[in-house]
Image (cartoon, rainbow, N blue to C red; front, side, top):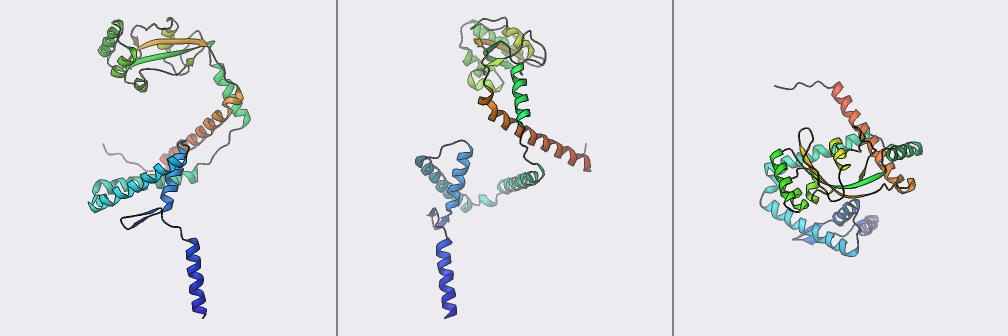
Length: 270
């Protein structure tokens, strides 16, 4: 009798706690947790998970299971490249777990956040500029691009073909930028000094002559000018707080690496 009661209790417990699978694909259970993990990843990317998006994520999970089954059947789960990728992923996961135990979150003080805001505002000039840029280390290509622009070829098209910096994908378009005047080295909010100097000589719509930037060359077009818009502190406070917190964690990570290197015995073969 006791054995029967125990068995019934165990069965009841299992029935309550067991979670039905999301689906059964070719006889294989796909855990419901797989969908919840996909939802969490989407939310981390800033996606609003509506019912429609959730259904799309479910379909992706099921498609992945189908592909995984076919890949295993074809032996790709034990292929050298797959095993190497698994090892890299395992190493990275272990490293990240270790770092998490050594690096502690830091909550920036209100004073530090305010100081960062005031520093940023102090670096702004009276005007801000919207620019488009073509930059490459190939001087002949840059000069050929300049000739095309003189002939009336669209700047964005030339930038996509010629420029070798990230803004090329946007047709050379850069974000609004402001810097103090007169121009001084190291005080242009990341804009190369020669470009900042050239910008001040342009009117909206004009394109500079080729500009030497050490190991590269550039053309810059002034797209627009406006009075500098200084954001209210409360509007940017949370962004600044997140930036300072991330920088503090990054600094701890760098120091951790320095300490490990200092105490390690490393011999690099020639």
